[in-house]
Amino acid sequence: MTKEPKRLYRSRKDRKIGGGCGGIGEYFNIDPTVVRLIAVLLLLPGGLPGLIPYIILWVVVPENPRQK
Image (cartoon, rainbow, N blue to C red; front, side, top):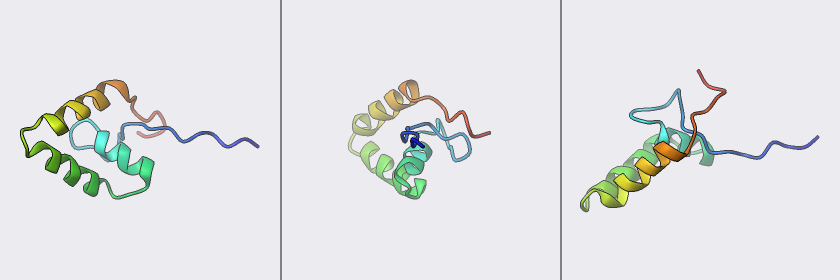
């Protein structure tokens, strides 16, 4: 048996805006709230350090096809 590689997807079940923070939380097996807090902290010093990576994540990473 070969184990399927772990892939990063945007979450469909744990999303607030685009599902990026929920997907990162699922990938690293941590609470998505922690990821959201880090994203907010990155938005505070002017927005760009957190906003640009989130938009790129939203565009590049596909939604999880196994979640409804």
